[in-house]
Length: 307
Image 1 (cartoon, one colour):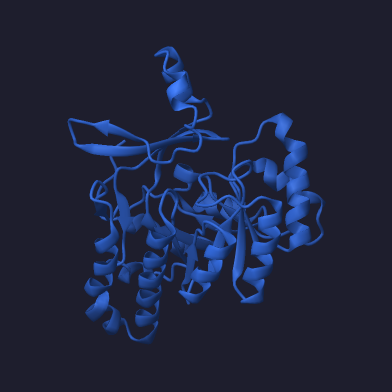
Image 2 (cartoon, one colour; image 1 turned 30 degrees about the vertical axis):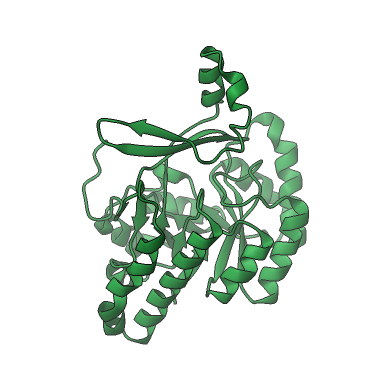
């Protein structure tokens, strides 16, 4: 059965999402993980993993940051903590994580998530041979590419089915540098906490969310992926996990998306024709709460990627 993977904002939010049918959760703290919906430092992490396991769900911890030499000691200590807490999987992009896992006799399985470069089955199998049990595919792939990778990979395959995506990341504090150059630094002292800033493309009328955190500057897509009406081929390909990415979204929004995709998965598992009959109605609650300035589309699944 396809897993429904979600990104909670707090421990309390996890309780709600369990009731709404989530199977697994991406948690962590921004010091180690990229673009998390919520911040889970050690006390919250302990509480979250305990709660998730009490309900027989899965806790995946994001350790997919880009690490420099000065980060390695903290990284190794964090991985020790995750083994102590018995996290179910570790999400990684930097091979430093693989190296840090070598000392364990029974290491936590890895999920390879290197953003835009997860684009072929050779990569998936390469990291599968080095301890990865899953590959998180790039969002820029077509449906044909996704299906071929699944057919030819020896690891689980995860596909994002809903939410915004990252278009650009810099480890520099670009907003701070820009405003300092403009002598406006005092006006944006809260830029690291402000997740409501938008870059406006007047020519295309697009608004790109932009924010800074520990990992630098992130510019997000102007649209949200929404595949709730287009899951048939992913079901037929036996994709292992559907991810709802709730970064920069409210708890209420993540709740509605989780509930609707849970229904989609259950309907298909009961009878594919039931999903076919109901899928258009499943979209309506999401449309009702979708922000006006954020259109929904199918990402690159059914259109050509132009680089």
